Image (tube, rainbow, N blue to C red; front, side):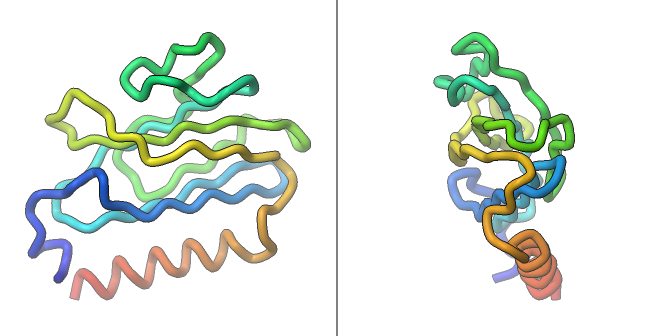
Length: 132
């Protein structure tokens, strides 16, 4: 079933990949459906956000990305720094966020060699095949 065939995107159905390298942490995501989802990425050096709807809790959380896109590169990190990311999504007309996951990353340390290129290539292939 292609994206065009699925009119109502369910924010609970997704693929999310997170990887890191020198000076960045990279997020890539994909989901079925024609409705574009708004994605929010919250970062902290202390702990994961405890509430998807109020990312200011606990104190020290910062929204580093919020928008409609297929990926986000956080370059405002220090190599060797440990970061806690909370990722959530919603349909633009919805008020509540759906939690996609919590990921701990250390900037400058690749999670797996080549993961970034493979993850992005896989996302591109799935998007192009679903648009046919």
